[in-house]
Length: 247
Picture 1: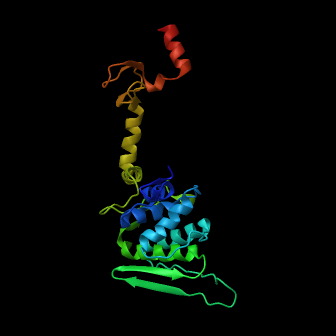
Picture 2: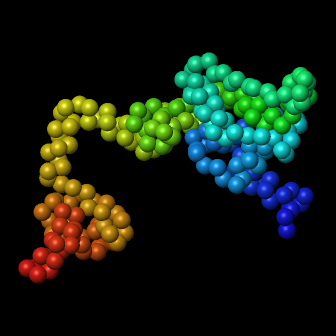
Picture 3: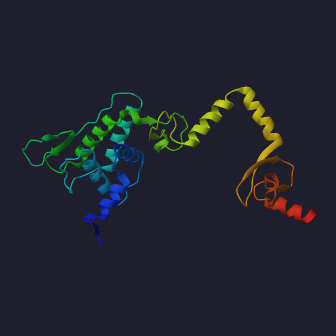
């Protein structure tokens, strides 16, 4: 069946992606700005996003979108908002017919606000909806504090939806920042190099548990599963063959 209780499967997929709360909507918007993907459902997601954020928009199913332009515009506004700068979204309106005025009608209905724009101005509707969302949740938008963040697009640091006082977009960036701060001190760097010469971390190929062992140790017993393995320093085919041949 193409519908479930009167709701199409395409709409259900869009709802699942974009979400139903403001934080979920903003999280989708950040992922949209960071991604280069053009999935078959992306257009449905954009239409649902407009209708979800500005609940009484009159958006046509034939509304036109330029995903690349939308992404660059939204990304810049999100970055400015995360850095505490003035975020601006320039909305260009296409005139529906020759010699007719382009008009935006703002519809106020209690706490809700929507827009009625002449023509198939999907680009303008999307930016107006995004502007409302950025205004509502401006304090939750952040940019990863780790300078070498690997998750951002085109070598830039990753935008993310902050939870409490988080400064990093993921645990990996937080760990890397802590490690860099630790190794920035010469005494810590010297101690780390000395320890590396004496010991290394052995990863059991059976259970993937990690444990520090001596480098010259040949037979390593995994403390987790009890299996005996060659140590990491000797865990190469030539060295394994030499151990089997010479004992």
